[in-house]
Length: 214
Image (cartoon, rainbow, N blue to C red; front, top):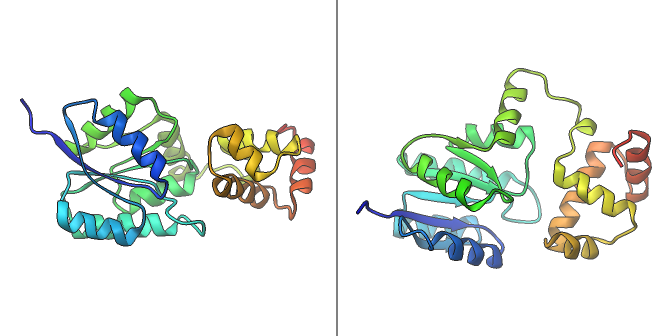
C-alpha cells in the first residue's frame, strides 16, 4: 500500500477545517497531521509536522489576502518540496496569478467536489500542478493581457451576493443564506463596491442594475 499523503489544513474557520478533515480522512491515502488558523500557527505546525501538502485559504484575517499569499511564499521558500494547494472562496484573476508566483502548485475554489479536490491533492503531491477550469481561465486571461475591467468580472459568488444585496439583505442575512460568515459576506460586499466603483450598498445595486448584472 502506498504511503499516505500527509496534509496540514490552514483556514481561519474551524468548522471548515473540521469538514475538510472529515471528508479527506475517508480516503486512506490522506492523513491530516495538523491544522492552523493563522500564519504563525501554520509556521509552527509545519516546522513540527513537515507535511507533504498544505491546503491553504488565502483569507486568514478580515483585512486582506496578503497574509495568505505571504505565508505561501514563506512556506515554499522554507520547504522547497512542500506542495501548497490554495483552497479558497475567492476567484479573482490577480489572486490566482499571485498565488502561482508565491509558489502554490494549485488553486481550487471551495465549491469544488470531493473527487476533484482529492485528485488535486494527489497531483500536487506528485509535483504536478492542479487548477480547476475557472482558475486556468483566470491565469490565461491575465497572462494574455485580456483581463476585463473590474466591473465586468465579478465572480460567481459576488454576483450571488449582489442579487441578495438587491433584496435588501444584511451581511448577517446574506451569510445565513449562503452558509458563510457575516465577515465573509461583508468582504464580498466590499469587493463588489470596489469593483463597481461605488461608496454604498444602494449605489452598488443601482450601478449593477444599470449594467444588467442583476
